Amino acid sequence: MKTSASVSDQTVDQATLRRAIAASAMGNATEWFDYGIYAYGVTYISAALFPGDAGEAVLFALATFAISFLVRPLGGIFWGSLGDRLGRKSVLALTILLMSGATLCVGLIPSYDSTGFWAPLLLVLLRIVQGFSTGGEYGGAATFMAEYAPDDRRGFYGSFLEFGTLAGFSLGAFLMLAFSLLLGDQAMHDWGWRIPFLVAAPMGLIGMYLRARMEDTPVFRAHESATEARPSLGLIALMRGHWRPMLVVGGLVVALNVVNYTLLSYMPTYLQRRIGLSPDEALAVPLLGMLFMMLFLPIAGRLSDRIGRRPMWRFSLIGLLLLVTPLYMLMGTGLTGACIGFILLGLLYVPQLATISATFPAMFPTHVRFAGFASAYNISTSVFGGTAPAINSGLISITGIELMPAYYMMVTCLVGLVALRFMPETVGRTLYEDPFAQ
Image (cartoon, rainbow, N blue to C red):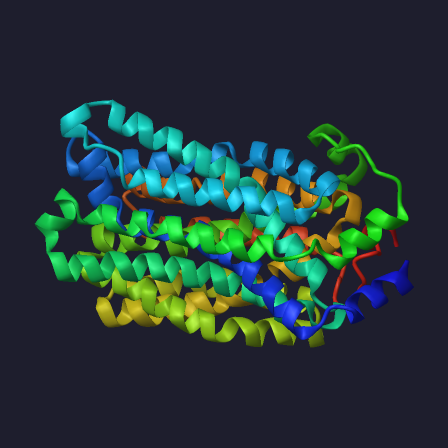
């Protein structure tokens, strides 16, 4: 098997590898483009599609954002099982179409004033479709990327998947900010917020085209030719046979995605409503921070190939645990402090973000890699990640303490450190090995 793995790695030429990176990253960019325009346009979306005053409408909109995450585990196990049985490529072509189509349709929903409760109901239904497709998209894209990358450079190449994450999110943020500045507040509330949602359609078509031109991954093809077809596993069977990697991944994702969705999705709302920045300033701060993060992602990925994934995660988790509260206090001092604080928080988070697709897929054997990773990732994300904006807002409302998001992040970093204690080092390992079987 190890010989097969090395041969597979050697047969992937640079042109094919670049296409695989582009095909994987484009889907991730499309997914996070949706999150970006939703998070950065939540004030406009809530006013257009929900009843009540501004505060209540925003809370409803944040809760709707969280609803899509409830179905992500179902999508993870459904698409993951298909991907392990039929191949990664076919599943990823479908998930990107569903994601981009649902995002496009959000921009077409009639306002609450014209249709009443049909408006929020349609939004909920589309967020469910988006969440179901995303449940297969991220796990599949990370698996696709990991199985194409050479063993000794998986961290570096895998970091470009997260480059796509931030690029998609930044594009969504930039479009919302640009249209806000260009059209003005009234036009944005009336119709301007819809325009960025319409951009999702061409992004999805480009991603599907890139994926349709690719062969399935060398690792999957080698595994398929060397073994008999295996039946797809349900969640119970996965937990029974692979509970150790699923628990480790789930624990690490608690920290990963609470930090992720707090920084990327909730921060504009926090900076505007809690710190007092203007809507445009609240959009610009995370956008600037994400540009810095994008610069350092490939560096962190390459470094992880040299020193290992565990040291990168340990540095990130401990750094956030110690510094998140003072950095939140710095953000509360005004626009300059918010920029510096967000950039530093983002750079502390980069060692986790850069190594996801190099770390998590390598913990599962090939025949359950897609389903195992997607299920564990999405169960943890649905409970902790997607709910982070609503939980942070609710904790502040209940306690009156503006630093509650920082305290919540600290607790989840402790959970991540416990899970890290049981994570095997995967750097340099072939994906034909099961690190938990050693």
